[in-house]
Image (cartoon, rainbow, N blue to C red; front, top):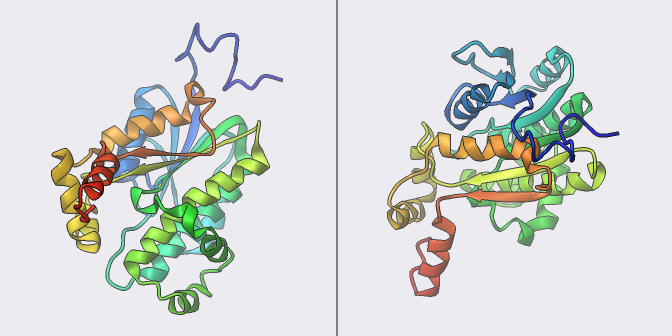
Length: 275
């Protein structure tokens, strides 16, 4: 049976004749708000899950990823079926917030997605924001498996045991999200797609947090490409990956960094270690 999200016969003739019902976490600010606006402009229905109420007319369901009860309540409130889930909610590294960072960005994010999967129609996509900070995930798979097996209550001890501070927690949290999505493909191949988007240095309200956490590396990357990215630039990639036009994009991390990674690689090759 052909899903309404992917009709091979009509895909070329009417590539934008579809309308979708989409769920979006973290849609009140930053990349999430830009993604919601982009999706609305394409005629899609957007249901936003966030701790704060967004501007606009989208339906809002309160979601606090630090609260297991809130996750369960939000999932129960999400009635009907959906054509995609866009997971943007997350927090940056700040002070000593290693445990909240891993809780929100990894454990709660993955728990919410797992709880939401039964609500997704065949052919739907799960598209989540990761980060270029997570680019070395393949070298850490054993540690990431261990992280994904933790609970919010065990994270403090896990961080102590593995000497994880807030900055490293953020890196690991995004590595784990990338790995989790690629692992999920094996259970849902042919039915759902799983994609992560890894931006870098985007001009949102939390950019200063990344400058403080990663220091000269962020400054060097910004200098090399000449500017920061915008939420709207990332939102366009998110919207495409959610769409049926991206039906053959599955189990990958899409780096959305304006060339920062390439510039950093060549700079390191030429002896500059800042990036």
